[in-house]
Length: 331
Image (cartoon, rainbow, N blue to C red; front, side, top):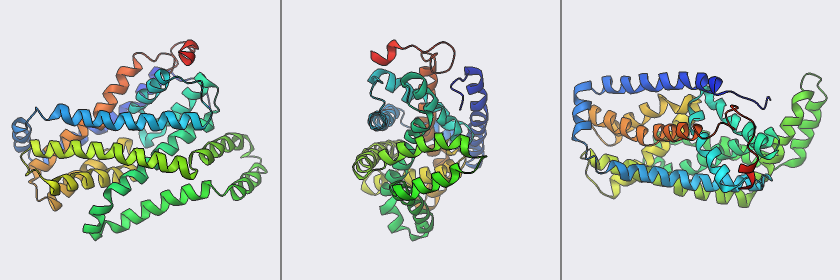
């Protein structure tokens, strides 16, 4: 994998996700009746919105701690907190690239700034996604028990994630498969990177790191669920424990739906899931459901994208616009 990338290429990769996001928002507004959605948003108690953003920042903070912990586990101990944070935030916009493939660039950044093999760096990205997936599954468990029709999707994702973690720890089997693949001439060149990816995954998915990562993820995503609860109360829904639990369940389960589609940022799938579940489970009006969906996605996904783009302005070394700044590694 090439260790260089330009800001122009990154922007081009973002364009499809940005356009899809615009059309998804437009579609939600139209489906909820544009006039009624506008009225719901205008009637929203905007004093609550900064609190929702703070809970999103709480989520990002705990996820950053997990990211930095993972870097230490794969041997990137020369990455400072400052540089680690910059890489973490700069990676937010990559979530809206097609299939989220842009996120593998964080492996390239790690290689450039710490010397860690790209494959090992990519294992951190994958471990982040899997531990986040396990966390939102845990948060959605109570809701799934209450609404059994969601069990098939829940079990499918659960078995897939647990299976990946378990398989990564069966080292003899993994080594045997890699050895056999290496004998195939067409695959030989990529096996070195695959081995590095596996070594990183093997370290990251050991029981203790997995427990720590999933625990941090569960608490962090709970923060976004509370932010969603605040948004719903700001739209006039009756506050209380039931609304709070449903807010956490709906946001967590919709995150799962968005992730399994592999769409940029889960765009379209997550929004439809949030609005649909609000309408069916909470008996919210279409305009309320659409307004709530627009507000929470702005406070989470798009808030992160904006923070990431700001980080890009201070990350010329990551974006391939100038030579590596070695002093950042040590300071």
